[in-house]
Image (cartoon, rainbow, N blue to C red; front, top):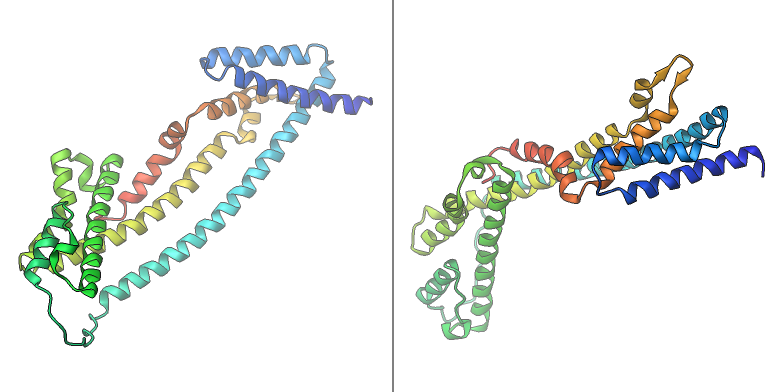
Length: 303
């Protein structure tokens, strides 16, 4: 085996060894992990002359730079996807604004037939608002009227469930009016659409506008949620890549004859190990949650 091939094999073995150490000490305190990494480096480089050790570290550095470039490429691809999403969101916003401005269509003529008992239908839908499930077969409706009733009941149930989920998301993130709310206040926020439906079924003609306004807020929340996720993915990913940026580490460990690649590698490996040890929840809290919360909060009234 040539000397060059031997040094490359040594660099590969060093990377594998450090990875084994990282996995073996993943649950240990940072000081113990650092000591383990230093011991592994000392052991692997003990039999390598100083000049060759620099070459091994240089090879490792090259591998890290290649990995970093691959990450940059993935970030670029992610940015393209975000731009596509933003374009889609802009189209949805335009459609929503046009729909809000458009006059209500005139009701289509319907064939005359036996009219359903609206008082019975209204009473059944009132039970739906309160979370009950009336037996449609007992309402005395025709098949077509049963279908219409089921449509309205399903839309009402979806609206109330959507409102509950939206309010709890805002409360858990500390966004908007739900940020400082207790469980009783949150329940009241969830009941906005429910109360508007109660009033509609009770004959309050002004309640329909309240319900429409609340549904518009629901639609805007969905758009804001998507925008906020896209923003937090971009912001959080850049924070992580910034911590893995090799150049500041090399600048930190400059010597008269050039960077101390060994110390730079050790520090970068410790940073990488620390990131790898984070749980999914830790990653969310440290790198993504705050930017998501701030972006979502910047959309105005959402709940």
